[in-house]
Image (tube, rainbow, N blue to C red; front, side, top):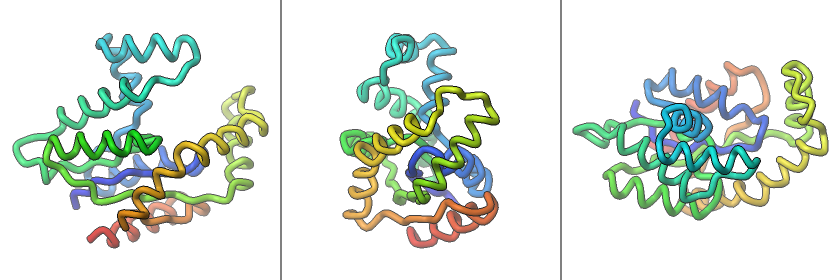
Length: 195
């Protein structure tokens, strides 16, 4: 199965874990913007240097840089037959402007997106999960107010992305609470809706 999907969900919903599991199950690549940033920074690319200028100051990397990195990654993956290209985008698009940019990139390389899968989770469960992870990993800065702020930012900026895909009738929502294996099974089952 060659899936081409966007994976959405709030911080702590398990996107990273599920993107990796889905990629393995489907035989496609999980593309995380965080991984792309790190690879470009480590590789000393021009985009990596630009990204590092922002992250070193604690600022968000601008859409223009993020879009260029995602485009480079997708273009480099396209072989002789673009329709056999499979991927799971984790962490992109983060806003509606990036949705438009992704549309343009995919059109340029001759690939269509199957749709978006949104992992949903009760905010209180997510907060509890992130506080537990912060305790285990020693993340002193992941306090409840910080986590609530991150969830608010997600709701404000990223949640409208799911609205775009809902309007296109290309969105499925999957409950992200439960055993990791059960959530993966629900996600795989949900992909059947894309035909």
